[in-house]
Length: 83
Image (tube, rainbow, N blue to C red; front, side):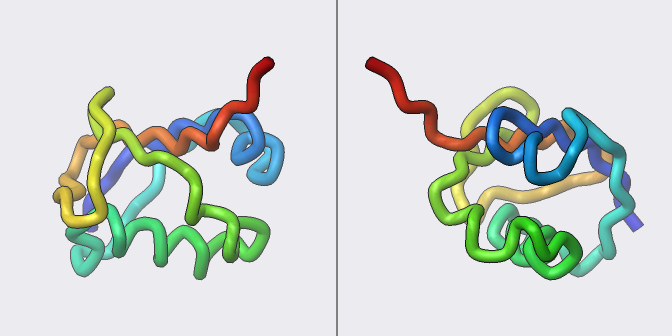
């Protein structure tokens, strides 16, 4: 198992009900895309809502193919509307 810290912002934080948590991930979760799928499976409130959410790994925006490693800090950042 690999342990990561998840940070939730704005609407994602509201859906989850907390701003952060540590999570044990199966070793099969090796890429950002797999993490997103895993979170949608584990958290029904997120299902279908992460398509527009940006993922940052260790304070750098990540692509779907970027790796997820033990000890990473992963932020889920929804789009922000402004005016």
